[in-house]
Length: 172
Image (cartoon, rainbow, N blue to C red; front, side, top):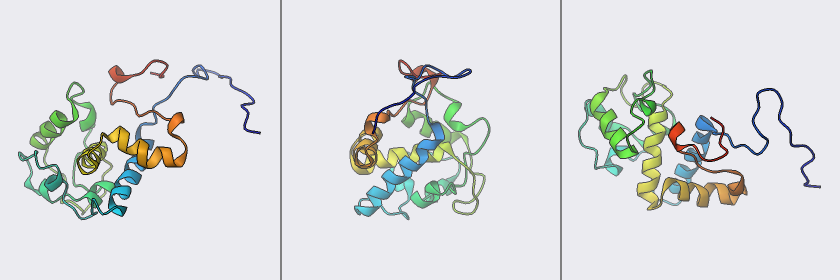
């Protein structure tokens, strides 16, 4: 009948109205948004990421210039799988400054396309590719092309990257 039957917390759970970050579970939404751009002809899987994000020109490892959209989607970009995660080493930086810093700071571990290595940073790059190719913010494009058509936009909010970005009611 579509009516909520029970809303209750157990153990150390938060208030039933609390919101949670889905963190890496958001990667399929990013991938779906990328594929929407591919389907529309605005992007190709073999496009080189730093031809799109051409403001980044200072690389510690020149092989990074060979990274394609497909490489990042499949976690085969060649690097940034170190611990601690690149995404959380300089949390005060915005995305552009973080990308610039990471490209100058870290060499790739492998040739792009050759090895699988899970990479949050790779998906950060894909977010910027989405923004560049769509002309919209990541949040707006994902909401308009993935969440709204799926009927889940009212149940989801795209969060920030750090605890400082936490919204009211969001669990720590």
